[in-house]
Length: 251
Length: 230
Image (cartoon, rainbow over all chains, first blue to last red; front, side, top):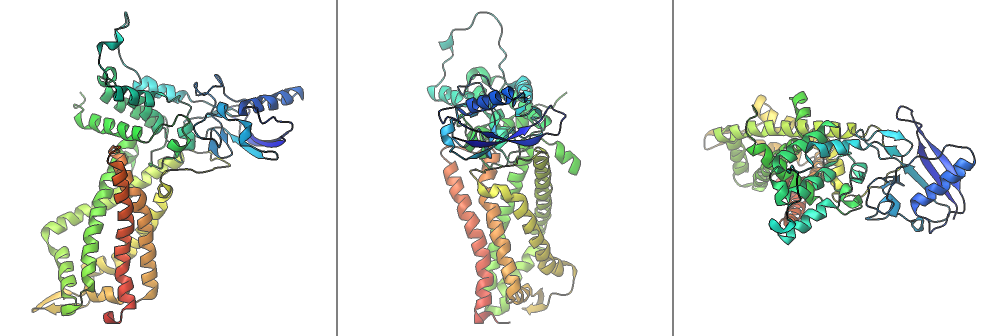
């Protein structure tokens, strides 16, 4: 098929950036979306032009690197897929495809379609962990965990930190990401020890780095490639509210 | 309040919006109940006027009224702060945007809110401020005691077509606002529970329809019925 691509090109973080139109012929519908971009880049390189920079790594939907805003959709028009899992079968001959980077004050563009998502790491560093003594790994079955809780924690832990929730949210809010990370620990006994402190610290960092507030619109839930639900945000809110209420006066 | 509101945690602001909003919903129900008494014409609108008098003079109601105004202002200020932060969180907009969401009206809370605020200003200057601070409200005597005839004022207003249309539009907007607000308040407070949330969402939907319907039936009955000629 022949397609027209409208792609955001930006030389570096400081440049202004603009959309550039590329005509791409002989695209196979068996290509993945990223293979189509590889194909585009090959043609650009052979013409001596600079290739389009985009983030990617595993290309199997688990690393969370490859977020692109495609035709108005975070990760493209398919549901429960990352950009790398998107196939060109979703498009047809003659289509114009607009590709933009995630847009958020907290995710500045580094180059073309690549954004800096390191604020997610900062949020994780603020509390997205459990403290454990080093040494031999403890026997896994010594702490009984109800199956339902283990499953629910796993459902939260499937978050790959791709940032689609931020990209899709009209407020550029990161609450679905942060709540998934808080939930995955809060549901397990190992995470309970620091649960309240974790909610407080991670939310504080999330606010500090410039994400918007949640308006319970639910765009994040509809665009999350891993199907995370707003119930995680409610859980985070519960954790945060109790943390605030029971917290001792700081000295 | 403005600057410190900016620095409250995002979830704290959402919880404030939720709690204050739910209080305002309760107030709406009380107000609606009182409004229905204006349809009772016996004794020259005595029940409505006496109820309005009670609401204007009773000490406990007056204390709650201060809280009500305070909460309304808090709801507006925190709402505006949240919106400003949300707009600021995406300085560069998308060129192409397809929208999906679970709650459509959440996209227009600031807009419906702003229009409802304009309605409130008109509403207050028509009734509340007029009764509190001016002599423009006609008086009526029941059992030798004088009362503001707010009932007459209401009937007069509801006989004016333009006013009735504006009033109905305002309440349709309020319905849109409530449609998102009620269930969203529970989500913000962390009460999204698999067993109760479907019920809460249904209650929210019913409230967002019944409250505007209740408020708008009154002017429609008054406008179209000969019985309410003044």
